[in-house]
Image (cartoon, rainbow, N blue to C red):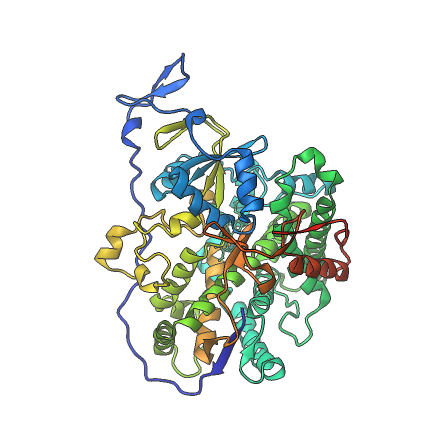
Length: 570
Ligand code: HEM
């Protein structure tokens, strides 16, 4: 994403607004009519009987075979656009279907009502998936699991320690000053980039710059330290961290397609381990630095109060290894998520000047002149919040989430599923459901502002970008604060316009949803394959990207892919 940014040199008089962000309503879960009385089991068919209707078993659920799925992924070219495949498969099979990935069976859920049913039955210790590849790394290197990978009562314990200072409003708002300092530096960096490499107007690779902002932001919250991402020359170590996060997500998606027993023999696995090694190494250095700092302060009898990591270390509720496991996961979760969301917001604001103007008017009415927005000011900016909400509807960072209900069998729609069934929640497909969001492809922040018509139409599970329940996003409040503070300041300082030479930016799925670079342009859109794209037969990325990755991997001291990866013409 490249955008042209014009410095704003005039302030309009404040324009009071009376719009308000509609509260997230919770609806009472109504079990489907047929499960009013799920109590009787028909032994011959092993089917649970309701009062009137017979519920179907998982075997009776339709969906593509393994070969058909492979065809969609690798021949039709949906491997990088699995979010779009959700929509296409929903059209063919309906809102509930079964997919096979070798021995792995996944039940896809693509309606707000059915997603609500799964999530409301998730149990005491919700499990996303067993994440065998991520957990395997930790076992290999004797590292602790963090909130993303831990399960059961151990997960609950970690969350109870990590939650308060990440989610409680009073703690979150205390990070405002720190984040605002990073925002100030980002605005300066944008000015510098424009002058030095953008002929005074362009900011090339804004998405890449936002990755740096997000990393700097989360580090300042967790460690109260700066990583130099806003410097003219960004430290190599930091760039390598950001690169490793992206690589780890990209490789994750490939590794899970192969049986665990084959991983040690795959070049991908070695790269995957190398990326994790780097993520843990950077986090470890930061944790050790903080421990040393605190020890010195104790030695000098100084005050040792501090923010997130300091609190974790001082409270002694977790061992240092456990803290490292959690901090590493927080760090990696904090990079691609907020940055991609801000990239998409700016992309739409650049394309839609009226929306941008309305946001600008809101920001300057709450913060006139040189006033820097605080968390209290943000509370007065419903349109800003609606823009982020709408961005996350169109581009949910987690396009497909998952749940495994481990405690008991569950009923979803007209089917009963045994315990341990893996459900894939197709949030991307539901975000584009025109019955919930009229004109689903249009960027309309106002749909999130209070109004009786909107209120009655929107299902509360139509767009749940931060997940649901006790396993929902741990970083939600910090992420929102970062995004609100940055977007409001950027729009106050700059008018964003599209890159005149730019094209339509499309999303791809790299575990998370992110903007495709020109090299990564999706090959399949609504079932149409493009022709004459050179594709690596092993990783299915266009060769241009693949070659880029080889050199990047090499540059970053990771194992480059071997040249035996043949290419084919699709
Ligand atoms: C736009 C920003 C973000 C979005 C849209 C987002 C979205 C999500 C979603 C959908 C989940 C899964 C929730 C579920 O399964 O119900 C999740 C989990 C998680 N997120 Fe975020 N996230 C964002 C930013 C962040 C940030 C900045 C951090 C770190 C500070 C973070 C840390 C986590 C962690 C640790 C989990 C795992 C929670 C658990 O399993 O207990 N996220 N996020």
